[in-house]
Length: 82
Image (cartoon, rainbow, N blue to C red; front, side):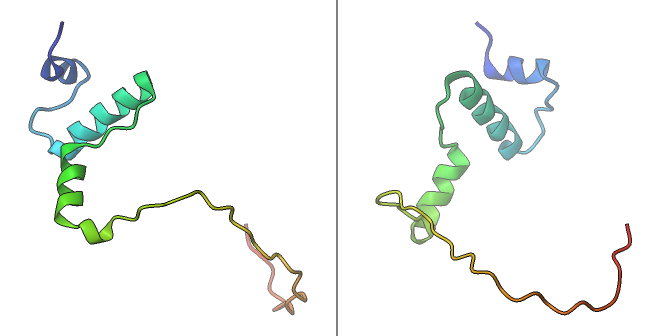
């Protein structure tokens, strides 16, 4: 079995690239192959450093919009240029 650094080298990644690039690639590979969302080390670190920024959704809620018709706006007389 190959190690992750060997796989990354085969995929053309430079080992000097930022860790975020490597994490994003691995996260994508895991999601694409297993359908599982994972949290990367940098995401975990960000959550630990800024817990106040984390939003916990209790239950899904249906969004609703009021698309009431508004009177048409007066034209400026200019035509769109394409």
